[in-house]
Amino acid sequence: MPEQRNAYKVGIVTIAVAVAAFAILLWISKGVSGDMRRITVRFESSPAMPTLVPGSDVFIGGQRVGKVRSAKLAEGPVVVEGGASRKTFDVVVEADILAFVEPRKDCKVFAEGPPLGGDGIIKIDLGKASEPLPENEVIRGADPGGFAAILSGLQSEFDGSNPSGLLGMVKAQLNGEDEATLMGKLLKSMGDVNAMTASLARELTPEQKATLLAKLHSVADNINDTTGSLRNEFASQKPDVLLGKIHTAIGAINDGLDTMARVLKTNEAPINNTMKSVERTAANIAEEMDPANLDGLMAQFKKAGSSLNTSLEDINAVTGATRQVVVLNRDNLSRMLINFKEASDHLKSGFKYVLRHPWRLLNAPDASEIRQQAIFDAARSFAEAATRVDDATAQLKALAELNNGNIPSDHPELLRIQADLQQTQQSYRKAEDELWKQLGVVAN
Image 1: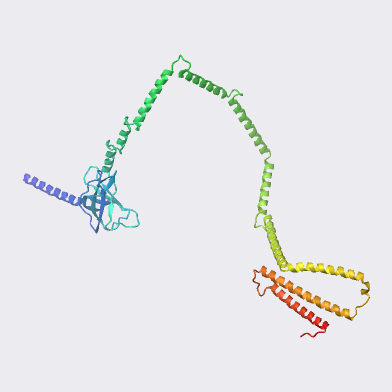
Image 2: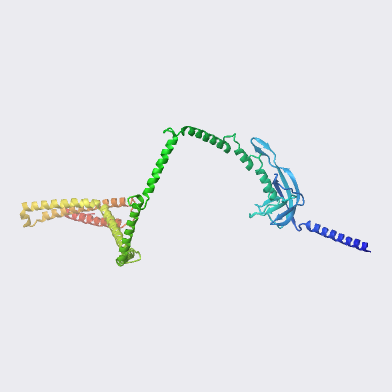
């Protein structure tokens, strides 16, 4: 019976362990459920690339969102280096991820291997671009990450046969046979130093004064003398040396500052009054120069400027009107001067005639002389009418020049000239009638 009881217990324990192991396997192999979408990623083949196999997990933000469906090696683009071409290979991975996950146009995909080896995993950075990733676009995978990638990078850097690695560069610089390397330059410098020391050894004989050692002793003596002189100059107990003079100058400056402070302290009230006066003066100047102050100096300047501008405008108007009058009556002015001269000549002749014939002032003219005088008056009226016509012609010509040949019909000067011509015409007809009357001819 005891043996049967032990066998029974062993059987129960074995069944329980098998059930627990099966449950653990189910929990470990638990997949991702839901609507899925497929993405394709091309990774550059490199030693740091981890092993990706169907069933490898895909993570986003530390959470499993899918699995790898296939991973295979495929030919990549042909690379030309130094005139020679070579083929490259990529690892093409197809994976299924949850459909609600939307990678953006700038998403990044990393392949990462576990620290202790084994199958790798894929991590996705969704990106931040505004455009989503097209449905069938192939994603270019980023460089591998994880501990294995770091170890692979360190292995590449510490590979002595890799000239671009850290250890390869150090080995290249430690090559003493190449003069361009650090070790070659150091060896050359050491050789130059050895040659210099050998030459110095020949120069350093204590018996010869002209040798380098004697010159060095002389330089050292001069340096000692200089430092001794500097020490004496900086002795504060001697007033005639440099430091004593500096102390004296600083003392004089302190005395001057004390005097200034004493003067400022004893004259504090006058100084304050002076500063207040300056402040009031500045305020008065600012008030006078304020444009908003109608009684200020600036406002008066503005008024004077406005008055000056108005006066200049009036002067311009007067000069313009004067110019127009002179232009229009230029010939009239000239003729007036001529007429004035003729009138003076007539007066002169008249005075001469009266002085020569004084009885003309006492005796009245007879009928024939009166008739002759009437005829002379008519002729004078004809001459005046002709003169007015000439004046009107000259004014019309000047007015046309002033208006560039286009005189408006309602121009006031044109209307005035027309009125003068009508009056001249009436005077002309009146003189004509008088002339015909005196001549005894009936006008038609």
